[in-house]
Amino acid sequence: MEPLDRSTIWPYEAGEPGAFFYQRYLHPTGVEAESVLGELDGGHALLFSSGMGAVTSVILALLEPGGRVALARDAYYGVERLFRTEFARWGVELVEFDQTGPPPERVQLVWLETPSNPLLSFPDLAATAETAHAQGARVVVDATAATPVLLRPLEHGADVVVHSATKYLGGHSDVLLGVTVSRSEDDHRRLLEFRGHAGVVAAPDPAWLLLRGLQTLTLRVERQSASALELARRLQAHPAVERVRYPGLGDAQAARYMQGGFGGLLSFDVAGGAEAARSVETSTRAIKNATSLGGVQSVLETRHRWEGDRVPESLVRLSVGLEGVEELWADLEQALHSGGSVTISP
Image (cartoon, rainbow, N blue to C red; front, side):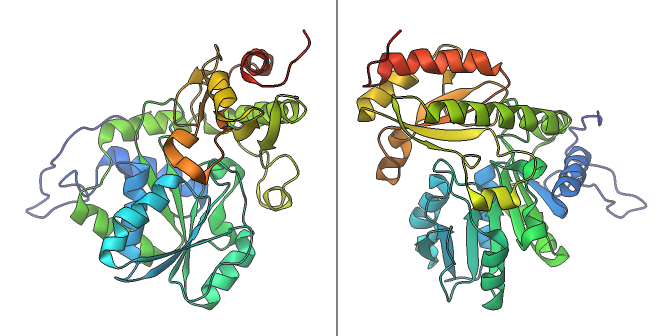
């Protein structure tokens, strides 16, 4: 492991600042993590203090005042809320669209999610990027749920990739970090400049924990993807489940772009509505009733409490961890028996 360097200052070299002089701009642990992240995604990586810090930095650093942004309608609700509550005050215009189709015209930035959280839709990355670039718009892809193990959006036309490293990249639910990975050096330099001015740099300790998590990223994502696919198939056949959303269940776009699996995130609608879904989320034992995703521990929750009518009241989001698939299925099955409206024979 890279040594953890918590220094906030470094001595000048012959009276001039060296590569490291003040932690808000660069520090050795962060630079090492960024080097690994850049290799994984095939671009120029930067660490931020949180996923939303990375999102905010992309908008403020790369978008002109009063810009028009096309946002995938079912992208992470926190991004949509950020646009409507904060960026709207600065004249940023938001246009939501179905990311499975073409983006709208006359925009300066197109924001995609691969796949979306928690509805799991998937865009045609190459076609969207071609359309966006033809009108001079950048394409930003939030690839948190896919990770670079399964998808490298820069290879399909994206200009910037965003990750909440709090999720799969860190992998242990003990890190709060965000990442941007830029195709061009110009975008990278602009984001680096903005990060230093705004002070949204990641601290050394979480950066060091991220380096630890990245060592097992491929192993974790492969295991989580295999378990999620099996659970999605079983949930799809369960009488207490009305619908399962998972890219591995026949999504042609996802199959075209994702390599080696479809990720550890899925959602399903419980028959019987909100009350039945609430009963399911509070009846699991091995799977914890908690928010977030991407950790080694499986967690699930109803999302309507946070997102309102953007999602069905009966939707349960499940982040599959590293437990055995049979253990997870037994837990889901007993919870569905307790909470679902369908009577299941013993």
